[in-house]
Length: 171
Image (cartoon, rainbow, N blue to C red):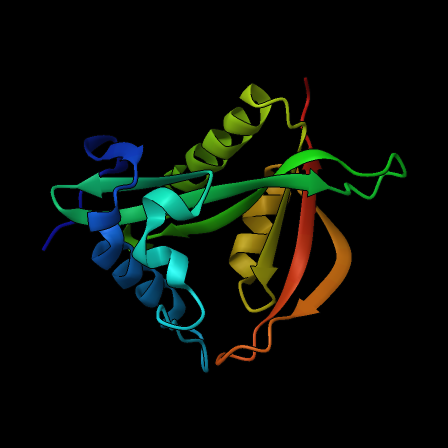
């Protein structure tokens, strides 16, 4: 089956009935990585109720199929620039179907989170990314995110370790 061009898709806030498509997309994005699984019943329960589990959760859909996601939560962030904690958002759940990659979808999704942060008076964005997702790290770097050197272990079924990235937004 041919895949839609991103411009033919609808970008909108997620609804809870998008959950099966969101979970399927995340599973697809995890599938190239050995020992990388998704468990929505114990570890990723927010994916079952995306409309209420995050400050914002967006989906890029074509028909009833989810092709990309991004979400954010709001909390204070230490951008690591010596100025201390500041209001911020955490960028979460940025996943793009492999067929739609390299079309600017991730850039467009990250811009949504950054625009949301600015509109809420939260000038800093942070994200944590699985150490295995090197392509995503390169995308975040191109979009101005700084890898802080911090690393954390999630102690989950996938033995996930994550790198922290931050960006102070221009006002």
